[in-house]
Length: 307
Image 1 (cartoon, rainbow, N blue to C red):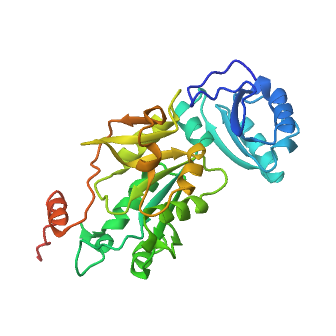
Image 2 (cartoon, rainbow, N blue to C red):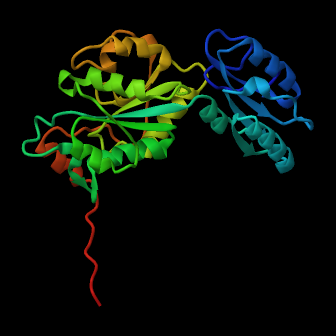
Image 3 (cartoon, rainbow, N blue to C red):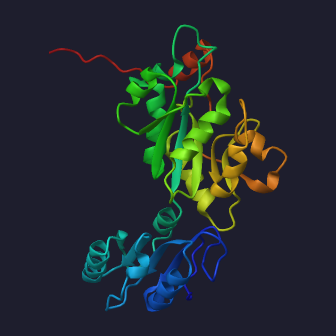
């Protein structure tokens, strides 16, 4: 489809098999539109360096379009035509292809925050609501996911108090079978992912030290050339959540039951998983002692002195 090569999960597209996106130079736009007409499984198109004339963009209806050009006028002309046609369009004013932004636009990832647990080892409280630096624990996690670059953030909950703590800051989905274990919560979250989402990042709701830099690092690793279907942060015992799981693995996740999760899907299959070093910490909070240790890592706020 042209001579533009981008290191985006091996997807520099010459008649790929299966659902895909496509990146082309402007001079190859007509060929790209023919490809869209022939391939219903091409979900989105990125055009780098726009031609002077806007062609018929009808084949893009129902798909996503990303425009990259250093000329504001050309960007505006293309975007206006696309918007009038009802095409979902995004544009970047840049003379050079911004590789990371292209990768993020072509390969959106959703975040699934697992927040439906029973806190059985934290007596007398719902641990996800425990205060850390003035904010409920679960909010630290969802903010890391959204600020780190997840295109969609979903919190799977079972108790109304958790939903109230989210307070509209993310999508929330109720898991009526939460007592059956983690597998049901992962599956509820996957069903909530939008159609264009290419992979899901699963994060535990009791991991407040997973910051936005951790999320961003894992997203970059998953999108790079030749990356495996799953990417996770390096932990003390191999790997630990968060873990990113491509759509090709979702069928395995839907087959799980009980308290199984991504570890059961990836166990004994090293060819599926990249383990990458990432900033932040994957510590989860299960007991009062865990909570005390993590609270001590946050600086205490000093009371303001009155004049």
